[in-house]
Amino acid sequence: MEAPPLRRMISTTVFFLGLALSAAGGESAFYLWQRIWTPAVAEAVHGCDSPLSVFAAELSARDTARTDAPAELWTRNDVTAVFRLRTDALNAAGFERLAAEIARNGCRRIQLDIDVPERRLGEFARLLAGLRRKGKNNPVRVEISTAAVYIVSREK
Image (cartoon, rainbow, N blue to C red):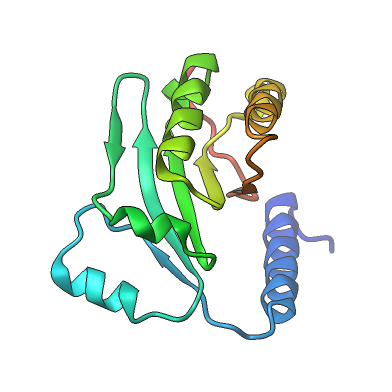
């Protein structure tokens, strides 16, 4: 009997995730979604010699919520700045603000955390291509967070 489509998709995702992790050579990496930096957090990050993916900012249609991480953090080669873009900011104005945040931080590596409804993938691809064109004189490595399954959104 064949596995249901969702189970097959999850199994495939777990398989490829395992391959990706094993290809990384077993090096530990950490994800830090810290908006308010206490002295203890700053000390732990300063002493960390493993790669870090660190929350930089979350952009919505009306607001930008930034971390208060120290500015020098973003210039470290082992740090990836994570930008969360809410669906209501998935438009040209939102990507303009995102480009400004990336430039403001001076990030060398960024990760975009965006929940893109399937029906808007073409729009997302165009916006991302525009973001890449803006940064062509200052190359930044871009990673994108994806999920195997997108939960249906009520957004029209």
